[in-house]
Image (cartoon, rainbow, N blue to C red; front, side):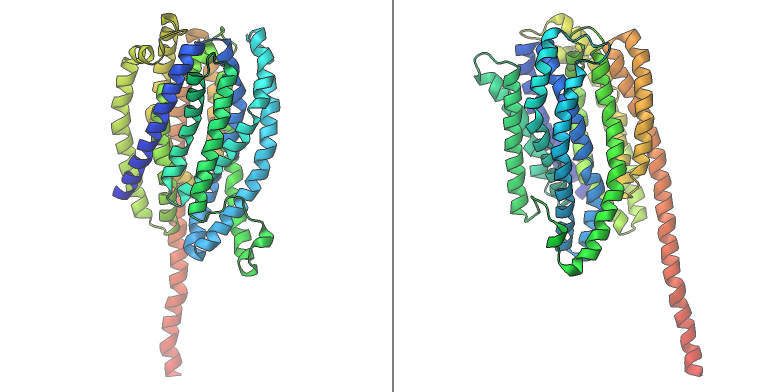
Length: 468
């Protein structure tokens, strides 16, 4: 528990620095662009790439890490790295295709029925979509590399490298005399290139695979076991992809439905997520990055008592720390928005709107972080199909509640719907994780019993043989 908390605090601290840099960047963006059409276009152009990255590359650790750790303990580090290389090689092919799909899909967002985007936003959206295609590809590669580094316990590079993205945008806005939306695009792509270079250096230092490995390069004596391990990764990867696709679709749905509201609603939704995003990203990175390798090792060694005790302690620790912080931030939502954003083109009227959105989003923080614990537990137990079922439920609930709440509360209703969705999700994940844990424990006991019965039979046969 102490080792896990130390690692989580280190990851959380580094993530907090990255998010503070992102908040400072957002403050610069607010001062120069306000809450208008140009920023709406930039954010909409990022919706599909962000969605596809989280689906294709963000889910790879959930499938690869448990298999990677099991392979490392059973066959050694060299065999585990061959498995990682083969998995990375296959993921690169998907990322190239998805970067093209993201650019094409982004073109359609401005023409959805009911959209109130103005003509300027519609005109610039196609250009932004294609300009951000390199970002999609590089960010996907960075996500895959970060997962591999985290599985080896190299948390610093995997967590801190994303700071280059907000720094790239902030430097562009600060030093370009008249920054435009293209300044943000250039800064984002440059920052992502720097992130990829940093992660590549970290992989090379630890002799971890970077370009991937083909099966023809694998030694003959390793090929059969590696093929079986890679098949297990695929079995867990597809449900994880489906789960992430459905869960990330809630963000896509929220931003798309915000475009049905008056101009500036997409930007208000984006600003309203900033503070809650800091808390959830810091907490989620600290938990998910460190928990998955730790839980996977406990499952591989069948240490069920330790696993249950760890889950119990973390559950109460999370609730005891996040609930008071959430209440305080909700009460002071308006002053926080005023301090962070109200300057330049960002007016007091926009502060009132964003404060309501932010307060509603903050309500999800405790249940969101508690849900991360159960997501990682389910992945460590290699039952990612349960995540797919839960994500499908969440998407249906999200759409229904968006329609109900946005009619009454406007853009703040979309945020309130998200908080309700994560509450439902957390309850489902907790129940599913405990049921799967009981099943795994029962299967482990049964396997031990079957191993003991033949040994007892052999012991009983020995005196008989001697007597004969």
